[in-house]
Image (cartoon, rainbow, N blue to C red; front, side, top):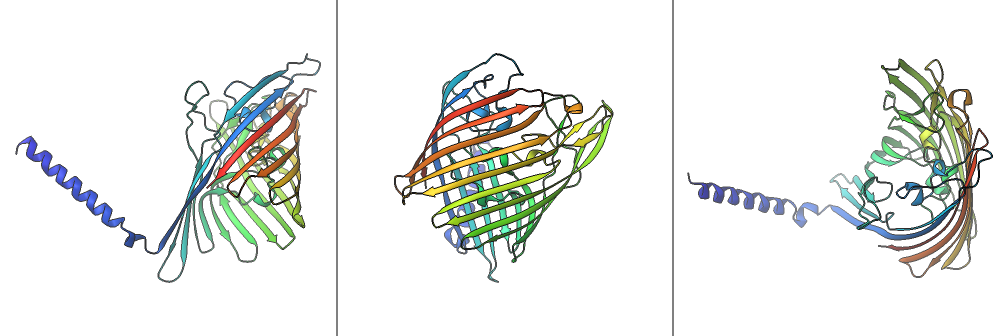
Length: 395
């Protein structure tokens, strides 16, 4: 058979496959499935001043606040002040939702969402191109949620209106990860979630080892109730921190646990949002991994790191278009300085005030002024001051 004849047959098969795909994707195939698409485009302009060192040109801490990245100088060191301005649209977000109704009346729902922040590829020199990242990819069927989404240990209700990406970062649980969750109709939810551990090497200060050695999934249990004026929640977590390194003779595990208490109280249109989280070995769950879950001691054994973090936000609604928010968050770390070294972080906090203005139901602008600080066990401290402006079009 000649080459041209073979090519024609292949082309015919390709067209037939494409036609079959179009038939399969015809409207009839989606008769019982609904789709929804949306997201937002967000522009951020940030002017940042650090008084104890600098954040590099492509440091993620220049895109949004990350507590552990606030530069710190040792006690008695001379001031090292730096100011820089950054523009970006990396927080822009896209999501796709679907809902399919089966013949028995049950429904399965899917959700996929991406944005472009916190990814390593890209810079500000020419094209400002950035790699998309997966935020959510999960489905819900009856009482089950399966896939990647917010941790059951986290309570979204206390996140404030903020120009910054999170707002109460230093003092709150913030985590998305793969999980299997069962939600009962009485406010209780239980989940089995992605296990991962971060460990400080012996005398490693603020350095980090991501182990990937945990065999037991992280287990969470939560209860949340939302009334007309008051929302409150309590969540607990139990986890196993493990680290194995044959070369250095490390084979150790440690138990972690914690409790997260949250509430949102409405006063007319205004509200207060309060959170308190405390525990041992929580590590990556609080303050964007502000501290590690455990530290290796001189005997190559893991010791869990204790922490307590809290957040407060007050929202005042002046009109249908204007609101202001006062925000405070803090984390205190009870570290094993004999094992971490005195350069480890002792505390981090942020205070902020913003004004949000809705031009219309789709376009919202904001301005926020904040001061963040970090202190270490050896007396080092540093401040990060920031003015941030934003404009967001939601669709």
